[in-house]
Image: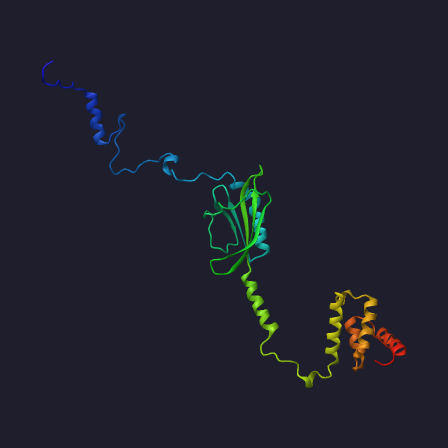
Length: 264
């Protein structure tokens, strides 16, 4: 063979294929796409490779537990929010009475919760809402038909409103500028003395007015008589009304006490 390099033999098919490649014409002879033409649809797996697959427990959780969430939220409206989380893809699946300003599809951030215990109740616990209000919460693990953890239902109760009510009640109950009872007004207040003695007697015996028996009432009349409670005008009528006794019964007891013990 001579020192000059042999030239390759011309191949018409190869040249045509190269030309089609430069002009954008498909190699199979189909018409070439215009440079400004929009691309056609791609297979789903190529169109969005990062798209998550549908959770296999989504329909089960919505069908089985969403009505329960709605019922709880309706019963305690407007103070309770109920959230259903999908543990399969760690997202918020359902919201009833949204108080937390979350959205369906948001991350749940529940990876660290232990779901190993069946029928487990987590809480009550407290957390702070976006508006600074205290929320008291309870979470329950939701299971699929095979007994595997599938979701989490969180009930978030706004207790801040009750803190405000309590603060208002405390203000009225404690009062402002309350002074001791003026002696000139309460020196002869036999009703106050009867009330004080009566409720002290009840506390000692751990019984309420509604739980008094006939024997209790008789003992109370005797104890009040020994304290001189019946010296006040209309005291017998007052005691009869408070103890739920007939006036004739009270007077009968007092008559017997005077005959056996004398004036108190």
